[in-house]
Length: 491
Ligand code: NAP
Image 1: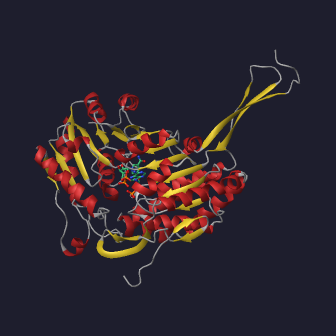
Image 2: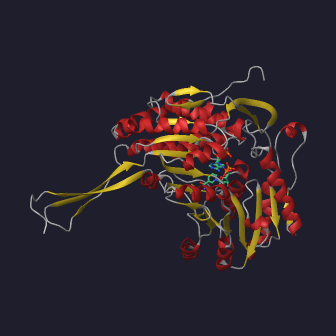
Image 3: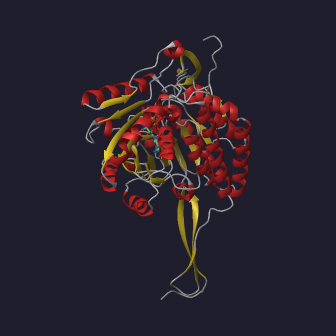
């Protein structure tokens, strides 16, 4: 612990300790004994300081022309690229995911920053004919104001970036509370915006517990909006609480994403997409594939090949580029995943592959679990209904598309889904009836492109979607303007 770095909050352009002076440490999920750093355990007072700094910086930033704000984002983009290897390493040692996935996360963060910077020269309103003579009618956009950014641990760079970059280009000032488990990458991202020349107070970072820092942001009257990503449980409570003070809220939450494989599917492509979707990033993606529904005529052949491919996946430290599956991100994630595997077995499902921790050699230093496949799953079982958030896949049989869609929709979540088929009418019937915010045909349930809306239906999301022009809609208030140039008194 002698050489341990202490990381600080960033408030009003200054790196500073929490008011209480309290700190906490985090460890590498691949090597539990490796302590990565000491971070500020901030409280209500720190959050209030950050909100005040953001409020004081608001007029200056909101009145900075959007193309000038964009210039700072373009500079941040360059810094992200220059520091890409360092950022990816930070993601892997802090969250655990394989280094290739971490590099993908850096790229995604760059893409959204580039997209948001480009919006600095668009940010269009509408002009429209007025119903009155000699009158001009148009809309313009204003920043929301001070916005709280509250993020989960599973994408410690990309999710903050896809909220912060659009929020900044729209002229808002921010209080950023990252997940307590992943503050290190949050510090690195904040440093990038500082080095890119963001004025003091525009972006403020406060690390510490959701219960104190998070709730202060959610309750404070000077905060006009909250952009949250995390669990449905926390998101629902946060939404209910924040809307009490009429804040604008977007909450992107959990998922239970399913893939349908019809009998005419390209099996190689389907299996590749499902293995990647279920076990890539150790299943800890909100868009991870957690259910597969296979048409019964091809079920046996599909299962044989799925197990064959899964058995070839390598498990180990995410820093080793040869590893397909890295550790779960924490002891509590490990406990949750093992608990669900136990629940599935108790409920009567069959473990067709995996089901155990991996502890051989130095794997006992981390939170490793075998990729796990359940068959004979009933749709009412907890493993069929609840988000597990680990490398666990449940497989169902269906007679036809209608039954497969019914199984897919029979959950409270509605984030992402996919179908593998070459049958165009069936694909369109699926697109029209599946209850998810993101729909894939012949591609995995994963990810999304930054210029398109991202988010879910049902208990997966509430409020305006993220990314693309939807993000600009969320982070601005529309103002409708009528100008009467007739110089005549209105009748
Ligand atoms: P979480 O426990 O809900 O936490 C998310 C964030 O909320 C963290 O920063 C957390 O702080 C904070 N928080 C906790 N209690 C709070 C409160 N009372 N008020 C305000 N903030 C509070 O979620 P997680 O475990 O970090 O992330 C995993 C979840 O995120 C999964 O359910 C996953 O599906 C979901 N997710 C969804 C998407 C999407 O776009 N739909 C993307 C990625 C992840 P602490 O860390 O200090 O508790």
